[in-house]
Length: 621
Image (cartoon, rainbow, N blue to C red; front, side):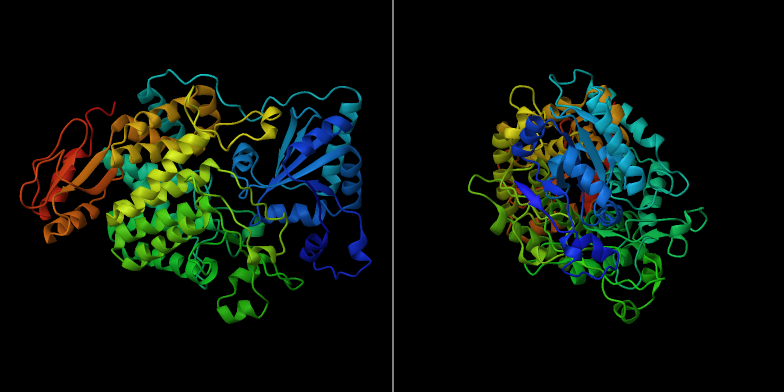
């Protein structure tokens, strides 16, 4: 499908007054990621340009406004290239494939779809045009060469390495990039979209081995998100910089990247929940309140699901006022005087799964029923509107509000299963089951689990593909995403534990082995939070809290609540009918892993005391 897009969005970002003459300029002939675009490139012997980005990305906006509206760029692309645009959130399979190049990512392929170059970040016309000219010259001379950094394809065989060794190597790789001064990862360590799962992994390891140093680093990571809070509207910025750090001049004053993406909000909610559960410090509870305030007021759709992001500046930012100046304004009234940064009203299932999971953690940490209610409402809306007859859920739906947004890329809603949507929403459903004991959520998760096995699982080698194969699979090799398979492994490990259904036995380990090749781990390991969590579960095993007996009995609820209060990242908490464990006449709790079980616990006060025995597993390696 060919997409013709006026340059009005880009020009409006620059404050240009649009007239009928201005709107008549030539624009790039954009296509969607579909077989027709690749076939046309091959038939016309044209280089393929793939632009991958997201609506909340300020750098993407600059490339849209300054580069893709430039007449020289437009002319070159329309003459010699087939241009494909991809929203990384609407198409998470493609977003993951090119995530190594951040956003915007610009990928160039030969006419046969062999990648020849990939560049990260926005380029101005003066340095983008030479790249285009060089590629055209190389093609004419027959000198286009395959890019050695192309995304890896699905490995042909599972990894045979002992998983405890893979786990330990991955721990070293993650720890190497830890910022021990500020917490978190990288130069500043503060905030960021990839920090949530790595922080959960750090808390998990600190707890399992009762490691005070790791716990201190994890708490530094949680505290770093406090520095990124917006004091006026709540929520957190994409990243912030500590007061004693030298930062680029463009961040002076605000000392933050003023983007408010939904994933960063769920990461912050998770960080504050974990920090509060470990310390009971009011600052973390206050952080939860501030993120919730922002999400409810700015990012919540009428049905209780969550929008994608709030952009970094109002549409009519006055001349001389920077984005940082705007966000430094210290009251709602002052900001509204200059207009409001627009919200991207697209609703993505995978991102909502992460937000729901974070809200459950906030409930478990604070006991505030409002957070659990928020999580349930969003989950029910997705089940009602997005679950298909055979059990899987769609990533996005047509959205009247989003259609009215001034988007860089049209909202594409593909009616196909994406792995990230299935496993993240499935994870959210299991979190709701753990927190409430309600079998409704487990039944829904079970349906998604079976549908995802049917649609996306590789029954020969193991592991999961990013999406169901379509016609482009004959040209672009299907991919098994590293982190996506990590999330899938965790989901299926817990699903097997809760259901005891043999269909799920071994799926988690197979998913880990399917992508756990040394070369892939070296390439992806520094951001491998979900994969690392899955390895911890598979190698150090679960801790199952089973409340056995009549669940309507007051003692059953008291034991369940006592289990809920225990901080145990590997915890599977549920009610269970007598069978595996005997009916003792009064509801009892059993805490077990594959190696041992507690004696029957009937006193809620004993639950936390007995759970301590599972902190340092003897079989952890």
